[in-house]
Length: 236
Image (cartoon, rainbow, N blue to C red; front, side):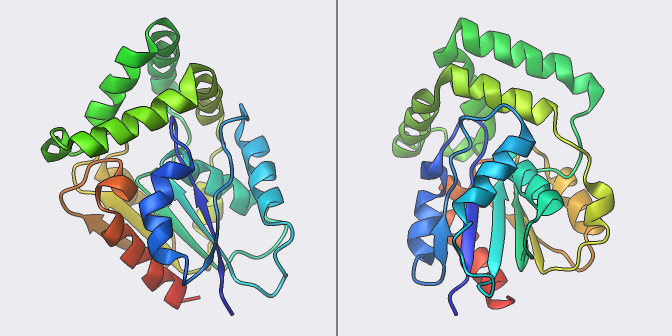
């Protein structure tokens, strides 16, 4: 039986951030990529993501894979779960709630995006990718196009959802499903230490570090990400 793989995108991106990975896995899984650009809180993101798979038969294995903000959505989906999840992948994300000291940084980001979206989003992108990829014209232009299409209004809603996310660490410490934690070696947005923390917290979780990658691993190293997700699917 082919499992259903739910790919959850991050802040200031959409389904295209997963496109190179999804193209490698379509023969292996039924892939769903919910729209996480309309909501301003994690609970609603979870509700809408669950609605995306409401028609999937109960005996079909369901796997969640969340990139960056999508990882927070995956955790909320686990908390809300109307059905069993067969496996979990957390990609360049964190299991922590938003630290109080980081809220002013988020608010400043909102102000910056509303004031000069192009400049602020480009700064985020340059911080997000591996330094060696800054000269990759196709990658950089592709990411810029995605961010531009998402736009400031959706980004503000996403940041509000990120700020208000719940603390699910107690739940994760009791989790009993195959779990992959994956992170780019030089991720500056959600540094590797956060992935190490998540992998240590979740019983039996496997940590994979992606070399020559920053935060945008699904686009920077799609073959590696797809290979690791395929190995996770093999465990279902």
